[in-house]
Image (cartoon, rainbow, N blue to C red; front, side, top):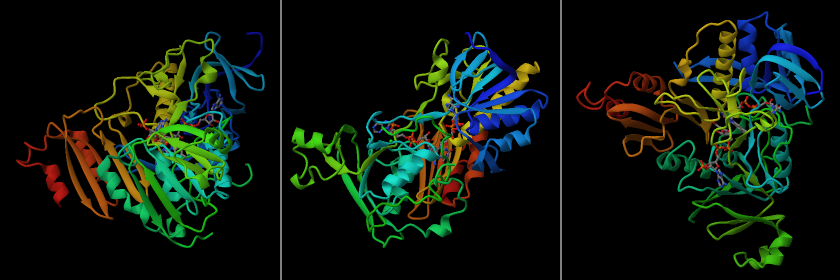
Length: 497
Ligand SMILES: Cc1cc2nc3c(=O)[nH]c(=O)nc-3n(C[C@H](O)[C@H](O)[C@H](O)COP(=O)(O)OP(=O)(O)OC[C@H]3O[C@@H](n4cnc5c(N)ncnc54)[C@H](O)[C@@H]3O)c2cc1C
Ligand SMILES: NC(=O)C1=CN([C@@H]2O[C@H](COP(=O)(O)OP(=O)(O)OC[C@H]3O[C@@H](n4cnc5c(N)ncnc54)[C@H](OP(=O)(O)O)[C@@H]3O)[C@@H](O)[C@H]2O)C=CC1
């Protein structure tokens, strides 16, 4: 490499999302004398605030977007370089940024996050949501929209279909039930009436608003309608900012151009066959469309259940792809099946002195029987924090063991205005038929599901204000034999209370 190394830092962290920032904070507080650089493509960084340890493994926090100068003011050892990393040279231990600077490192942590895995890359009528800019684009397009199609059955789709008002939403899901990445069909059934009901008043819901979208800085179908007078991308992010997170939709108006509050039709068990423009539609003489519909919409989407819908745009809420691209060329990183950088139990990649954390990495150590990776805010924080500890421990030649947070999967979130807590193998992941379920459900109030394997609790889904999370977490962590210890199942007793 011909370029001159500007400066060599002991630690270089790439990415100002939650994983990168937490890693910087951990390193800076553990080795205050170390020279640390944070190289990030976006001018804003993500900071964890109001951190609360709810129980042994459950945590809650707010996330704020802040100027990167805030971090430099906090840590005198830290230099923030605002530029995207263009290439990495693991042999010479250096990175080159888009603006042509080269920095050396002793240890590097890649926290470059992910980007939306879009249905199609080049179609301007297909949007992905990842960062503030893409949320802003969604808001802009939605303001003139009468109908949108949302494809995907995970976190973003669940949030979007509930939040969008003033616009008809067609929701296309691959599965028999909604929300398959988080729930089973029972929980989906519990939640679905919320799509028909009126949303609680906005003001009562808004606890905090942390994102601004002002100028920069096989085929069945159901229809749910909430009548109320309204109050009121492939366009994926290119040089992406950090991912949005909890409550990203609060504080931005997700409102279309129609006089309805919410109208969602779910198309089950279908995928996307084809997306085409009105001209393409007219040329192809689609049989499945009513004649008066042809040419009326900017874009059409044909589903594998044979139906074709015209709409203003399509939201591809179909998961994330790890942002590995600039780091791979010329290096020998081992990648996982999901294209993430493989990391071991010390968050180390296959390249020497290179660590990775957050959405960009895939945890490839032997997992605890009760933990799985999901690309979530909480895991980004935990991985960033633990990667920082590992990097410091290696420099200080101290031993380090896999952190306790990777013992039990736990996640607190909110869907359809219900508190949702997921613990362990909450969907019986990897258990095959070797498990039984106990369910307690009170319509409109709570849904409690316990996963038992060999008489021991291995997972739970808690929807609503159940107040059971700590008890169940203990039962899962203790792995007590619930059948033998109490004669009859104590989990069942807890559920019957
Ligand atoms: C709409 C939405 C809602 C979500 N809601 C929730 C939720 O409710 N709960 C939850 O737990 N999780 C949620 N998530 C997931 C969560 O936001 C992510 O898992 C988490 O933010 C990942 O953090 P990260 O630091 O790994 O990556 P990111 O936040 O994506 O940060 C990556 C950083 O790397 C920088 N970068 C990228 N490439 C380069 C490069 N080449 N050079 C330099 N810098 C680079 C980016 O600018 C960015 O600063 C949501 C995600 C989305 C998109
Ligand atoms: N409250 C929370 O905790 C939230 C978390 N998030 C996180 O943000 C990230 C991005 O969210 P999101 O995009 O919803 O990703 P998710 O991984 O949550 O969901 C993606 C969904 O899209 C489906 N899918 C994938 N490819 C296709 C396809 N070609 N056609 C139709 N469906 C497809 C997946 O099905 P399958 O699984 O069968 O492949 C899955 O149902 C995720 O890491 C998510 O966990 C986002 C919002 C809220």
